[in-house]
Amino acid sequence: MMMTTASSSSSSVTRWMAMVPPLLLILLLSSDPVSAFGSNPSSLLPPRSRTSSTTALHNNNKLDKGFNLLEIASSVVPQGRIVSTVKESWKFGWQRMMAELAPQDKDGRYTRPSYSFENFIGKTPSFPDEPGRYHLYVGNPCPWCHRARLVVNILGFDSQEISVTQLVDDPVKASRGGWVFSEQDQDPLYGCKDLRELYDKLSPTGSFKGRCTAPLLVDKKTKRAVSNESSDIVRMLSAATFGRKEDDSSSKLDLYPPALTTEIDATNEWVYRLLNNGCYRCGFATTQLAYDEASRDVREGLRRCEEILAKQDYLCQLQFTEADLRLLPTILRFDGAYAPLFKAGGTHLRIRSDYPNVHAWLKRCWAMPGVPESIDLADATGSYYKQLFPLNPGGILPTPVTPQDLGLE
Image (cartoon, rainbow, N blue to C red; front, side, top):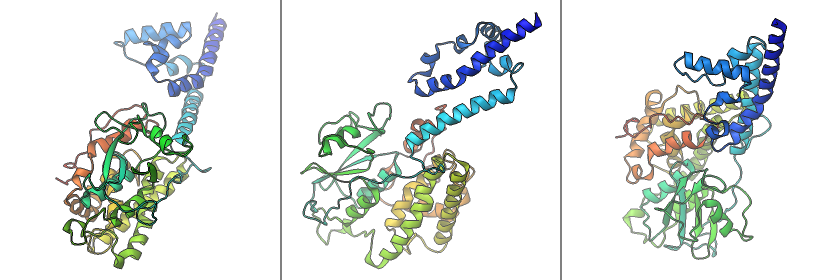
């Protein structure tokens, strides 16, 4: 009798263990995991296990104990083998989804892809410096979009000089990527539903191949894409006049003054490598080696900033420049998303408490006209937890970080 019971239990456990990877695959691919399993996940268990699981739930005030796998199977299969099987299956699925989200090299390092359009306003007759000719597409959560939005706000450009559409981050509704148009902010060029459709319309072949990213700068007159590289967009918008006169006081802020170009370019290089991209390399790393390298870079970048800002108000001497503008979106998102979710530099680091000089710089930047209006901080940081589901599969959103929490207001 004992042998029969053991044989029956062993057979049930074997069937259950074989189900683990497919079940995880269903969870990853199903748009509604609850529907995929039904309202009662224990219905997937073998008959004997289902009965004991149901009884256990009733005896424990109807506590949800998942599939009750460890209690049922560990008497026959060592717990370590069960845990290892589930762990490795989950890790495999996670790594595949991370590679879809963020391309990896062979060592698990996030490798940012190249961009598709590299035109420049004012450099060729094809894209002249004219007011009202260009349209900018940006999304609030994206730090690269934030760079472009900051230029528009800080330089005080109005909609007659350059128009702007705010995209919504919703990968469920988007046909590719994550950006869609809302009823409040529709596409003014073609009435597209999402950014992928707009990219197709802008493509000479009518079908764009590649990543549909924002920010995106478009020539409304010719309906051609100018650029989707944020650093180029920042540089060309800061250089453009859009018909302004030389004595216009609103155009006096020079983000790339001739006397500082060499210093700004050098600063931009290490800020991007260590911090702008370093934070993403932490969050999207799929091996310990890749994460450790990126985390060291983030800590080194913050150390450099802290050291420089102990001696001067801004990264390049005494004035706000393009270098500060490119760092600002990263620092604003650091305490709310990059440290806790991306583990950038370690989950314990915070700008406000650990880097007083960087925090003082952040307050100076925040006090500039147009900067607070350039971002909805709670939405921006919350989007990382909502949309990057491989990093936050449970979908639980932390209490949002506000400007008040960062000591900015």
